[in-house]
Amino acid sequence: MNLISVFFIGVGLSMDAFAAAICKGLSIRKNFLEKSFVIALFFGVFQAAMPYIGYLLGSIFAEKLQAVDHWIAFVLLSIIGVNMIRESRDKTCTIEEDRLDLKNLFMLAIATSIDALAVGVSFAFLKIKISLAVFVIGLTTFVISFLGVRIGRAFGIALKDKAQVAGGLILIFLGLKILVEHLGLLAF
Image 1 (cartoon, one colour):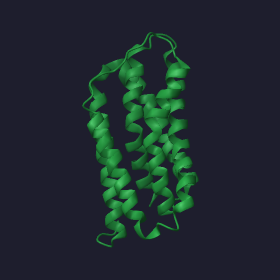
Image 2: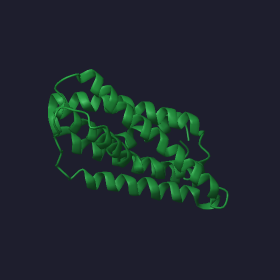
Image 3: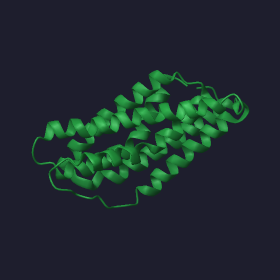
Image 4: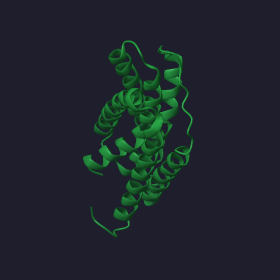
């Protein structure tokens, strides 16, 4: 898997964080830049840490499952993508008062990065250079989340569902790409 594919996986994974960042941006009135940075940092760090943890767990079984690793990656990415698309139908967005509740942010960062854990497992099967993947995913999520907070402040919840659908479609496409490449049907 090349760097461009890892970047697109990072974009796809960051869409849940983007949607949550939009919701957070709705309530920020004071210290906007500082709060945007903290929110983006939480999402970026957790989005980077989860694939690493998944990679470590997946590495334990990678050799044993090498014959079906592409199917595992396809299934995991497709399930995550379909779930993101399904979650896009939720039109709710909890608007809090203008403060950063770090406990709430911590839980939200974990919840939006669980999908990345499964992606990390698939990275182990695909023998991805995990340090580069973790950096790209974390940085991508940081930037997208930072922008999400700004967009939330400016436009509100209108883009939340579209971001989740786009992220889901990206992950499904990348899962399909991995499967097709490993079956030798197409070379990317």
